[in-house]
Length: 333
Ligand SMILES: C[S@@+](CC[C@H](N)C(=O)[O-])C[C@H]1O[C@@H](n2cnc3c(N)ncnc32)[C@H](O)[C@@H]1O
Image (cartoon, rainbow, N blue to C red; front, side, top):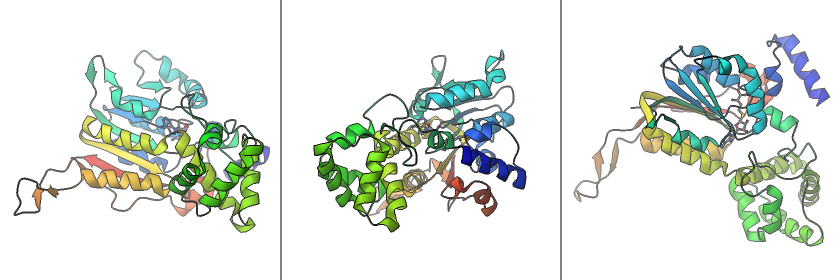
């Protein structure tokens, strides 16, 4: 932890990153690109589904007029606590444009003004976890820090330890294969089931040792990353939340409203791509007309990024955690 701080301050000196404490929490990825793509109506209602350290929220606020409104969600109480301090003056002002919500971003689809549902001008999702969550990990997200294998962003649902204790071998194998695309899924699942007969796999060190004993050394780091990612995705139903939120926000978008998603692995990116593509279709199968195979429809979304946008080499050099980021943008027709 101390070493990481030092290297980040060295980076600041070298590349003149602003000396601001909020960047110690999380350095926002594709900040300018994502907010440029998101905010087209300064007086509109926006949602930041993944508040984290508030980097994107701050940038969105800076683009809104006094008539604008921003609802920022995070399931992690530390992010809400950090941002309650960071945005104290905005939150305490009489006409605050910012509302912080300590909830899963799935709840974004139920925000209302009085009894009326809102027309939303834009939704931003910067998926995954913040640097703060990885560096000060107390819930078992990182194999680099020893702690209990919980992995829940909030307090709901089953912990990672619970899954490792109760799922059978086949279910564990499927979990690692589906959410981690892990080639050694079967071996690892078998080893977990053998090991837990003697003692539970309860901590990140227990799981790390077990994986390092199961796969060859040259794949240790990749396997650890994939297995930890798979468990985190399953525990927090990350793909379900993403799919649900994209589907339910589309009808709430005002014409010209935007959805911007920054994802960090192919499973997330595939969901975003598929949902955007489906809503951008101009022809669908026509069950009423057997002679023609498709009929014309008005698309709900226009995909503005035919290929996902990626961080520049410069950004990756300053912030290596940005390297896997892929951004897709769509606009309500
Ligand atoms: C990559 S960080 C966001 C960083 C943020 N954009 C910034 O500039 O600091 C992702 C954040 O989203 C939160 N998160 C992930 N999935 C969530 C979900 N389904 N609902 C609410 N928050 C979620 C995590 O707790 C984490 O704080």
